Image: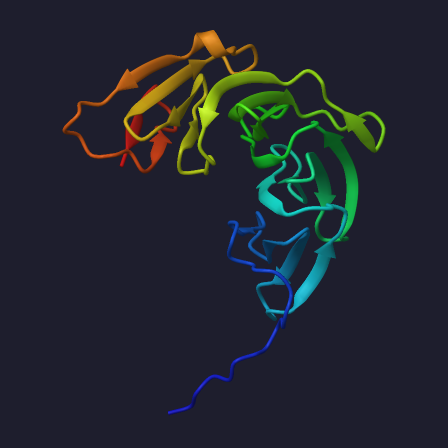
Length: 215
């Protein structure tokens, strides 16, 4: 029986499993947050195709640009959201938020806005911001809207988008927000589980109906 040989593609460096990796939209690449670098691996050869350099602290999340297939956005503890062309390995622009960022979340249904989790002295906050990189290559965003406070480190399993609303899950509750373009903190409707119910570990929205499911 013929055995496949392992191919060594990386030695040393930071962990590539601390934060979630994503495949490119065409599945040609795997993008891995690795310290303050995003490493782009070819799924065909396993070799590192590009290293996206620009962040000065740990990259906490990589997500798809909601309308441009060959671009991604990333969040970092260096307080910036950065826009990348991952095939060419080029940083196109960045937005500074004056607080360490624990995650960024986008949705193709809403190409002009995105959400982030930022770390403050009072706790983590879920904020909405305008995904606008049309200005200078480095801008400061002072207009993000706080949607929820006292957040844990949010993951893509705990936030879900639909055409008309989005849902954020907590251990024993769901908070539902409508109208993503104008949503404010007071707009959320919270639904609580019973004390004997199991903890919520994930949430997803129905693609067509105004319904969501939890696990």
